[in-house]
Length: 352
View 1 (tube, rainbow, N blue to C red):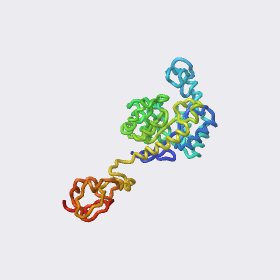
View 2 (cartoon, rainbow, N blue to C red):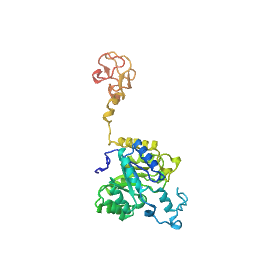
View 3 (cartoon, rainbow, N blue to C red):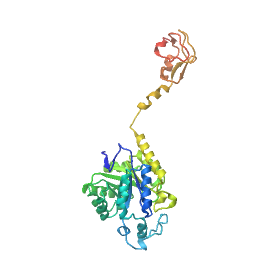
View 4 (cartoon, rainbow, N blue to C red):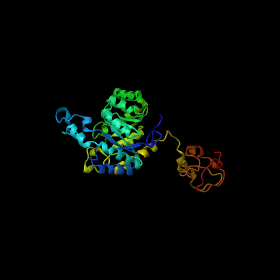
């Protein structure tokens, strides 16, 4: 499958995973904190930062009862009205250009998830290198069509979408002229349980749609993300926070800077470790073969003396005859005097 480019980096199986630090609303609408988060993400080695581009009014209605209040008891945001939640989690539009510029100066790509068509145009005017469609928006076909029409790569989280819904989203993007598509396996619970992460979906997504694939991960820690690399993930997105204890709308399932640095390191190690099907040892192991076992003279032997377990042993290193010849040399005679520690070879062995 062909690789594709986002900003500074090639993305695909032949390249280390592309790590995206999602700021979400963890900045608490404090611009200085948002800048500090970007600086910390760069120091940790992230390849990109991502924002979310919306206003409370572009997301929902200003209604604080009924369908517009989060009722799930196990939700981090239980009891909150949607409008109020989005209002305090939104990244002000006025910040975007400054934050994108900072990320670029620090060597990272910077882009965002638009949540309505006007946001697509706004981000396109800021020359983002790609667009990201959030999992809850995967069924917003007009939004996908709009983003795909801009001629840039499109990353789409699949979340709870059915196979047919993903197919419709991918077909919509392709019909709008976008062929550079990355699908992210995503579990749309916050936080997500590893037992519900179903990483085996990743290679199925790749094969079903012929796309680059990755993981948008809401589990705690980095275990699921590192494991996803073995299944073909070439992009990994994790929410990011400077200090979980200080709070933030997504802090409970976000990585702190040291964890983000570990994610960058360990996913690259996992990718490097994939290699290819290999038997017989790699080139790097060639010298180690000398420390296998072979047949050595364990006691001094006179010419014409029989060979056997009393004067031969199978030991390390491997400069003598291979152990598979042990039975063949039993009872044969030495053709010459052999000192203890001699590596046995065929020239030393006469007819039984």
